[in-house]
Length: 286
Image 1 (cartoon, rainbow, N blue to C red):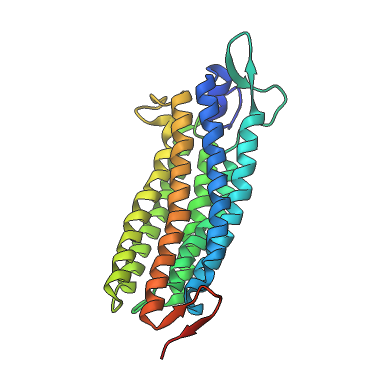
Image 2: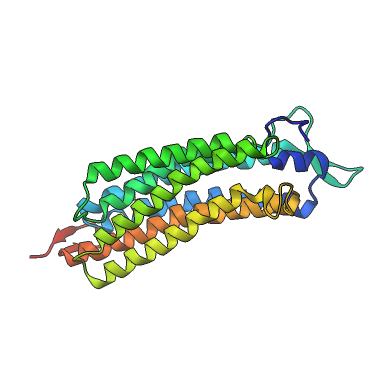
């Protein structure tokens, strides 16, 4: 199985098995949903910017950067899907289109390469670190986040042709993934010290969301090999499941995460005396 070289398994399924109308449209629709949510959320983060005190606004600004990046690159990925496959009337399925670019999950990795550092930096503009150095945590987030994405990006090229290299690069990526989880937990624990109960609870919810949503990514990465080397999901079901999983993870880890950070920032702003007035005036109460 190497007719397409280091192409991802979506292309091998499209070459050998084809996609039913339902599977093809489900992927097309979930990819469209992904970039549409990012565009809608972009407006939300812009419009809620002044609902928090100025010291916390960088978190919203970074959410705006994340939404712009995610919208553009997920839009390109959605277009990539629709051009990579075409309907074969005789066989009644969608197969790889002749002469078209192959479907490429690399667009997601390019998006994550921009977004992951921004997502990790965001929380540092909401919480107050009581023991750790801001610059040290920031740098660790950037290094581990970048290396996690780059090594995962390399690994996904071998998911069909070389399972050993796929596993090795995936394992390397997982080391940085684990460091990020450990560091995020540390940051949230420090941030929960000495703050109002509602903000503390929100930070706790952010940790649960972060843990669950980030755990979805390894599952999607491993999708073609779940339940074996050529797993039970090395088919159109696995392709649909992967794109749904990636989209749920992206919306949770970017949009919902950003919203919850905004809620925490509003709670902290209120506790510090910040008053937001809808007429456009803002002030600090005495």
